[in-house]
Image 1 (cartoon, rainbow over the protein chains, first blue to last red):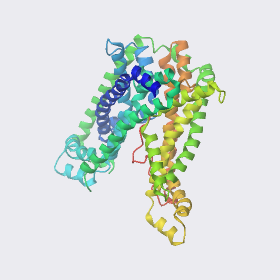
Image 2 (image 1 turned 120 degrees about the vertical axis):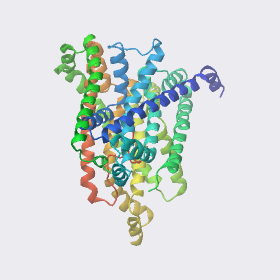
Image 3 (image 1 turned 180 degrees about the horizontal axis):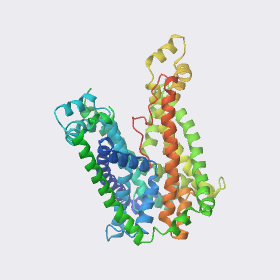
Image 4 (image 1 turned 30 degrees about the vertical axis):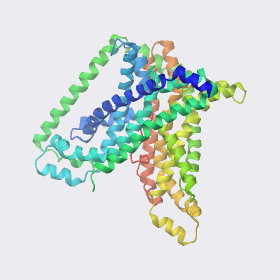
Length: 226
Length: 291
């Protein structure tokens, strides 16, 4: 136990800081991927053929690419080769790269979640919207999407959970986050590696499980009863 | 509701608007693509030699194919082990004994909440430590760590698939089994799980896509899989962008094939089971996003 306390003295403040990085990545990437996801879902259900093809193409390509490759393409290719920087600060720059990669990747899943929500909206709703003279965009904004988003709470919540766990992949973009700190701590103290692993694993449980409960609660509260 | 009912068959005015929207979309795509291409050109990334070097015969024989072999090998083994793990825990989740169900539920939920990468890093270091005592070869520890982490996470997801597959069966199946005198265990083993398995085959194939994609996380613990080889080839020749794009394309093609087989299966299998075969879906109705 004494050995654990010396470890905590050395790394005690870094653990919450590392988790806070994961949480910030998750919050920003959730916003980014949701915005892009709504846009993609609109494209995929729109009457414009080229937009449908664009949305479908994006989803199929991105969904089947490992997130690790997207991270590396950002850091090794776009930053390393094309020399595109988002911020003068080295760490902030990589943090932004990680947020962008996470957003681009999960937008495909957000789009599919919203589309599954659109499928819960009865046909009559779209017909009624057209009957009162609404065009595609007004119908989507006023009638379809509000109901679809409420029907998509569960799959959207699952995407947010997956996104939160995937913030660890930001390690590929050299962002100092939880998985990297765990690696350092185990290298420093391999004798208590199980305790270190459980600390981080339970940390993620404490973040992820409330999101799941919140999703269930929100879905029960807001999903349109049919 | 299908997408096509969201709008009427377009008339003359709508056709004009759609034409304009098509043009606007094209302009937007060009507005994004042209600066990207210009930047690529400016940095010399469009030079043919960079692309030919990423695609020539020696790149395939010395880098992509050996890398792909390790990727497929680790993913293939993880598929088998996670299906076994998933079946065992799926049964435990449905066991007649409440404490067994509860313990299995805690384990499955824990494994589903912990990021795969956290498990992978832990197993990597645990195996590296174990290799000091000579149990396993130190060089193999990333390989075993990838398989172990993929097995635990995807096994837990498959356990949930088994459980939800059994739950989605009409209750007449269980009642019929009980009526001919089967115990709950027999009913599970002989009637319910076999049908649930057929019903979940498409979802299972979608999970294989997840396993294949997640095997790329092994890159982060130094496992020599496709991504690692692609990066090595790219850093040697200064064309890392090109080699990463090729690696991504290989993943995309394999995954698209798996996904279309899943869709095909879900159509063909629907007559073989009382369960639902709609795919590609996870336990929650949407394919789970994984790394």
